[in-house]
Length: 381
Length: 250
Image (cartoon, rainbow over all chains, first blue to last red; front, side):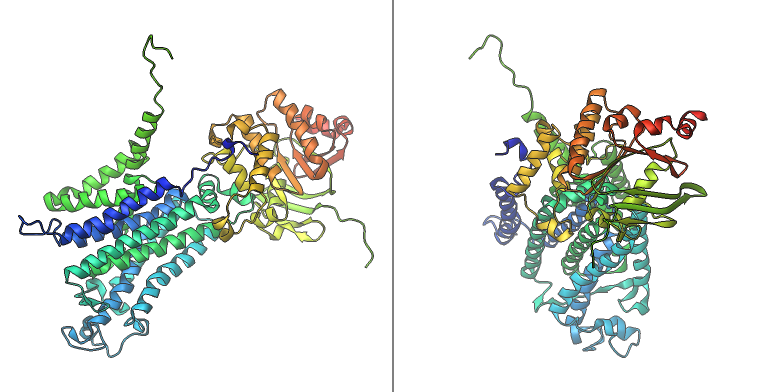
């Protein structure tokens, strides 16, 4: 009979976890829509105005993106500074579907070709646009394109044992190369203007508040499922293998684990999550263009994660929402200061609180729980 | 086919490795029989660690072959594949996973499927718990089960690492300076543990602590400049004038 001390794993799927998870779900998926739909009798507008819904939806997409980076950076020690590329590729797949949905309602009225192709005097749809008039095809591509790119890129990098800062630089180069490619008009993705002017998604008018609420809910659902998937991975034995290889990669090899395939697995899962986040993001902001591939965007994701708390899943979500809310507010109030604030945030988190916001909260709770009990003098049991 | 003479467990044939012109191994040939306890000594730079690197797949030889059980050429396999064959290694410096608990370190070392997909769905069974519990007891780390390995003392880390080799039923263990940095008492206990383990597996120990090598009482191979200088019992080796010259002459 093993002693209780033998069981060091906290019960990751216990009642406390599910209670907290459900509470977050209720706030995000029930309270927010209700507030949006409810108009107080003494007010002219809803308690939560319509224009905030796509903004919140956008934050949720960023949160999923941050989660995907935290999975590989916080747990497997792979700092990808090109994760924006997977996000943008997922976004482009969704954008292509939305362009095909416009049909003859475009400026040029061409039933088959999107406006930018007519403008470039193209006569037929390039082969890689086939199938994008079907949502199911586009949905499959949202998963497959980022997934396959990650699989090939990761296989080449991890097989050659490229790690640390070298890998980060390579991922920057990858997203930069993709940005340059997508800027070109003859790539067939709309060049530097990208794709915009979407009309509807699965027959739902994208300008209607109800559609936007639906997209917000879909983003919340995707975030919840993505969180559960990441939690499943990190609490599995594979999660321990990842933590172990983050600290001593060669030792993991000598134990007989394939470091390459473990890294490749999480890297691909992470890229797919980023792609899904991008696909949900595009219809909510109404545009996708090559600037999503810019190296700076990918670095920003790393800032969100480090502010929230690298190596804690909730930290990635909290960081993405906090930093983006600050960005929304500050780029309105004092736009020229934003980049300085972002840089300062990164330096501050790295130097002053490396475990991020969640790390600070956990530390505060830990010290409160472990404070030595003070027994008042003279008082005896 | 008639049964032939048993193949040696490990056989190195004319293995050479050089780094930037420095010949770390110079046509090294070495045979380790199944069930043997072998100690390998040699001055710094004799190629002891490089020899282990070659056997475990960390370094590819420039020339020569490394055979396991007479048939498998280890120089064509990578570290994970070699580990699957049942060859385990303890490093010179203790390398445990500092951010994982002692328990988790042992859990990762359990002889079990290493495929990424199965580790994703792997769950602790009663059998796993019993084996981890037994190993914790054997290396005396029961009280530290739930603490991070990084919080252990140097000696305890070495013991944990030996525990990690123990729990994974290896046929061949390579121990690189297992008593480095240990107190005398810990060294004695380690020698006892190794003799105990050697009863049902093959062990190669690399060290230059003569007292420790003597306490193991096994066949000694002396390496010098990447090749075998001599082999024999500890007394034969210590009285060999070439060995004395190599150790003291310069």
